[in-house]
Length: 92
Image 1 (tube, rainbow, N blue to C red):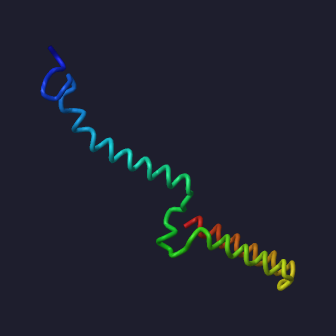
Image 2: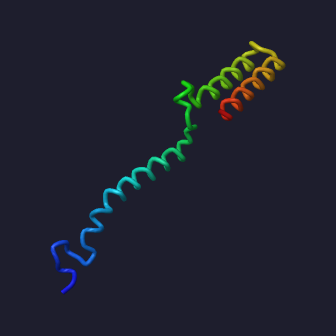
Image 3: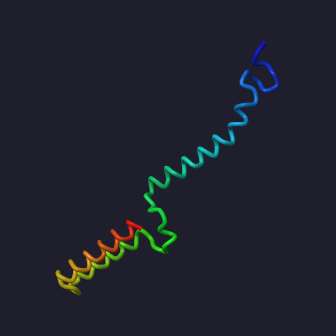
């Protein structure tokens, strides 16, 4: 009767050999999904920068403008410089 052998089925040892490969593929898929969900930019750790740095700089700039420490022209000029810097970083 097929299926009553030592390995418990007609598939033999083949599925047991594939299990480690399937586990590795599963772990890689989980890591890819986590990266997609949290949206990390590739390579930001290599440059010593964080994605939040640009948000913090813009937040501080807005706070200074709201407190009246800088004029509207200064605000717009500095905001444009931050946007250019961000575009340059994204191109790297």
